[in-house]
Length: 191
Ligand code: ACO
Image 1 (cartoon, rainbow, N blue to C red):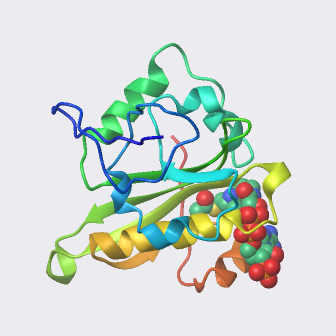
Image 2 (cartoon, rainbow, N blue to C red; image 1 turned 90 degrees about the horizontal axis):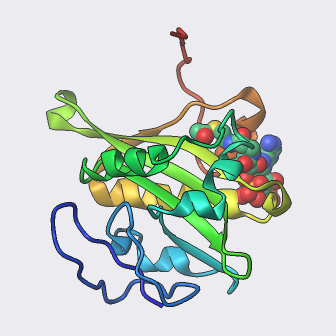
């Protein structure tokens, strides 16, 4: 199996050292797979594969998975791909990872860290963790923890000085187990 990342605007090239895919396939990935440190692939059941989001992960149930989190209806023709391409066109900014169950070829867990570039803190970088979801049947098997740990490693690798996230009160214990602590409050204004 081969996972490939083709930087926007360049020709295909293979990435040696990338994890083995469930089947021989060239996939268009959101970011270079070696951005995920190799030790993050350890301790994952053999039927599971951790990798960057692929352009066709809608066909693997990415949106159905996200519906455990919030409203995530199917998108009109081309909109998933269009969104993927927009994220991919911002290098070193959007890192969405997925865990795929090889036997079913379904996405069973996902999460994103996006990297905000600031003027303060000597042009510091802040990582924002977003859209963490584990499919109902796979919850409680440490996949959420694995996703967070991997996103943290990606953020560290990008040079973030901190990583922040918003969550419901119910999820505070989960994030505390992942090493986060409560700080500040969230405000919102719906448009
Ligand atoms: N309350 C208390 N403890 C929890 C909770 C919870 N709601 N969820 C997990 N934990 C604990 C587990 O018991 C485990 O503890 P242990 O190490 O002592 O055994 C530890 O946290 C790690 O749990 P995981 O098995 O990794 O959790 P899971 O794979 O089920 O993922 C998640 C947790 C992501 C919250 C999942 O339940 C889910 O997808 N929920 C619905 C969507 C959601 O709420 N996502 C988060 C939104 S916030 C955001 O995206 C920034």
